[in-house]
Image 1 (cartoon, rainbow, N blue to C red):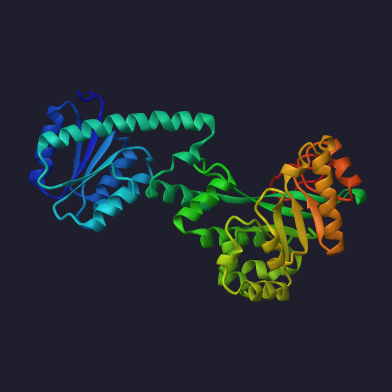
Image 2 (image 1 turned 180 degrees about the vertical axis):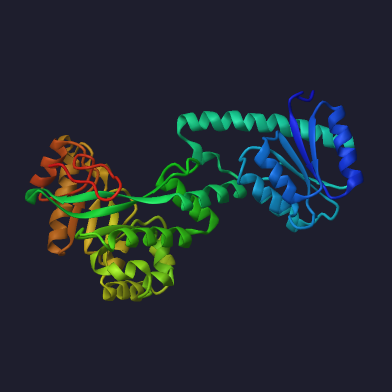
Length: 384
């Protein structure tokens, strides 16, 4: 494989003789080479230009190769990084793979092998950039964050750019808004929708950070607002976060106007002392809702364990309910059962007037969906 003339390679190594040998071999192969003996300077170089490949020693003072790899992924998700070490170990090899290094080479590295590896790295890096551009065009950027370093960068940016959209929940017969649901949003393009952010939090074991950020944002916005009630989504594992139960936690201050909405992404069986935790939340003033009834997540077990005050019918049951007799029968039965249990029912995803009218006819008068308002910055007015 011949080297691309325009390919620019950054070499980072604190051994002068080695970095000189690497640079000569790569220059002779047709690469443009930038050298640095320091990981911090390498980071500075990244701010000045884009590289097609990076070759870095692992053991360096101040900022080692793994640390540099993390910094690289904060600036470029695609540039291939080749890590070199004179003291190989299982731990560093696993870290190299986990954080997205393309190759892990052991010193002494034959110069012919180094050139071949860099040629391959440049080709793969260019392919990765083309693929990322294609995925971005197709709106599937979250599928590209395969290695941990890239995922960590994307997730942290999602946290930093987190904001909450609000969508009205209406009592249609009264033509008034009775609550708002707070919905996760972020300016981070690599995790372009809430599901992608939650999946990243699960993979990185950072659900606690995400849940706290969401609750803090909601509390800040709602605490000084006149809205009657707000629905806040909880991952089931948020129920294991002790901060949720602290009287000084941001959301605790407005517990009397908060409904904690739980979607069963994982089994509630994983939560220790669930019954006592649920009881404590109610003592604090929170109410509970189960989300996605009809979507296959929340079953009888979760209903029995949580004894929710509210159940939300998923949009899968709502869509085209005006022409689907089976959906009508299911919603009618659910509505009647919830009335007997003194549980409020809210139908989500209402988009058309025929859907609205059918739901109201079936006794489901609490509605949410684009027909009334799209989620937006606080607080959009409902259209009736």
